[in-house]
Structure formats: structure tokens, C-alpha cells
Image (tube, rainbow, N blue to C red; front, side):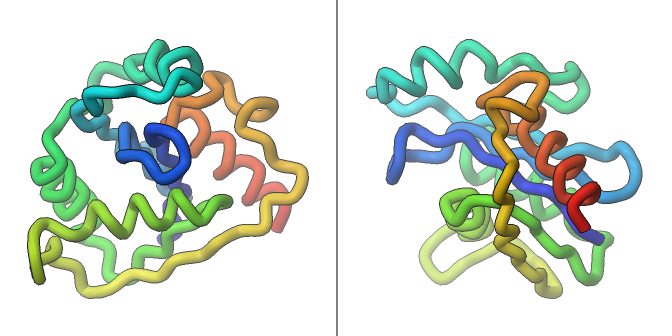
Length: 149
């Protein structure tokens, strides 16, 4: 199944702050936020941090990086061929980074595929109900993608 990915991170090249996956079918959304870095980029402090908790209570998981990886592992466990769709390379990089649980170790997956979608015309700021919130931005990406194909 396709999953639409969005992440929020502490400025370009910065630490992962939150990650969301929205399935193509069903309502089992995935959202996790990680501990905040000691220093937060000013733009992120103003435009991302205030909106981290604007998600449904049952989806809002604040976890350590390792626990977030294990939560992701459990979420994808029953999908034999997950396809992760994103519109920005950093989203895929942060997603792949979360798969790694330690030196030479990663979560258990039978495999997955990645798709970098050329989202010309897509803007999370314009299309998302809550811009710069990974869950809402991933929902907006799903809607845009499915209407574009």
C-alpha cells in the first residue's frame, strides 16, 4: 500500500522533530514526535513547534527515537510491500534515518519502496489544514497526489 510521508525537522540538516504516514486506504494514520533538540532554529520555533500537538489524541505519540522506530516497525509490520511517497528528499532521508536503531541495526522490515513525487503545484502551506504539522501536511500530500494521478 502507498503511505504518504511528511516530516518536520529542525531547519535544513537538523534533527527530526515529527513524522507522519497517511495510508492510501483506511484511517490508521501514523504520527510521532521526538524529543526536541536543545537549540531550536528560530523559524521552526515560530512555525512548527506551536503546532506539534494539533493532532487527534489517539494518534499523538511523543516517543524517544528508538521507541519511535519500534512504533514505525509495528505500524508497517503487516504490509508486505509498503510504498512511501514524499514530495521532498529530506522527508525520505529522515524516514530512512528512523529505520536505523543502532550501529548496523535496523527495524525488521521485509522491504519497502520509496517514491519521490514531483509535486509541482503542491504547497503544504497552501494545501494543508495545519501547515507545518507533519500529520496535516501528509494528509494534504495524499489528497494532492491522488488527484494528480
